[in-house]
Length: 177
Image (cartoon, rainbow, N blue to C red; front, side):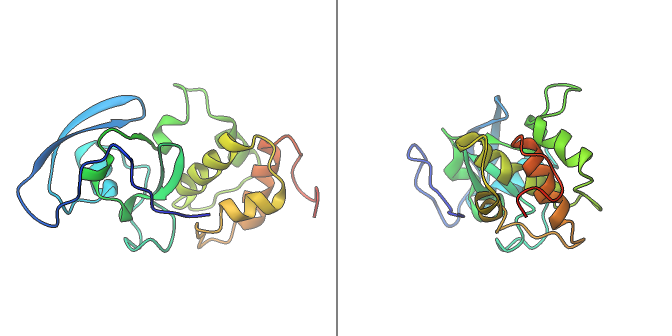
């Protein structure tokens, strides 16, 4: 399920005005930024923090390529204002691995060949991370629901489902189909 959430500790949003200082906690690193009130979290991550994993594709909340976790919930970063994220925990795909050690979801995606061009992969991974944090062994229905907001133009959906199944410890291809 997709929701745009507002962090309870977020400051009120402004429609216009000068840049404002904000501290964002991204992947356990503090980023002190000066952001315009209209700047999206996606643009702040990409341009101000130098984190390019979340992709800017539709910029309208339709594709899921910009999915990040905001206080543990999957959100479209293009629909959230950076100003609203002070005091929140932001997790991006760059924070999944630990050095050279891939997160189990990343490993499962590689093993299941669940990416072709790879452009949608960061959003897919973050949507699944939100799900797996709540339920480490989700069934197919929960996986499909978690990924409903993520488009893959290459059509790797069957492999993405296989990767999620493998990460859940339920094997891959043809299991529970």
